[in-house]
Length: 181
Image (cartoon, rainbow, N blue to C red):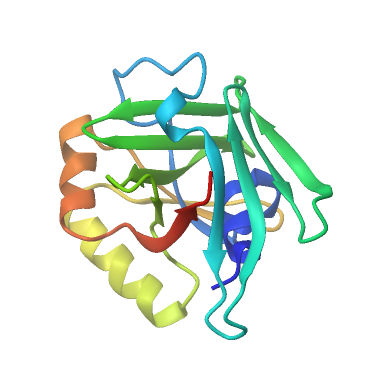
């Protein structure tokens, strides 16, 4: 999978049409980071299985992140820590929270001992999979459907323990990014 897919995950401007969202930045009760910790800072790339080459580059710095193309040129929007981009650290996960249309959208980053990262989300792109996930979520939590002009959010309000249970039960899936420096 190319990094472009990950850009969709990272950029709150390009989130998918259907998202699990939250009433507040997750996990509840955990203070946001004031800067990205040094172990997470660096340059990451995904390996394109089709071409056998590395794709675009994600650069994580103390203030947020940005992207470079294959020609080393910055592109797309930068993500700067703010009141609409909040990162929290809890139980070995970085919780990347984007505020969009009054909803908090969540991505998880888990750093591996090698320095590589796993980038995770609740994937609702596929209609059949979405119905299955929402049905399972509905047995655990109240799921409130919120429709906006262009998007649909499925809002949940878990405690920190409930959120960790969702992670452990495999609701969050994703890709690996290789740390190159």
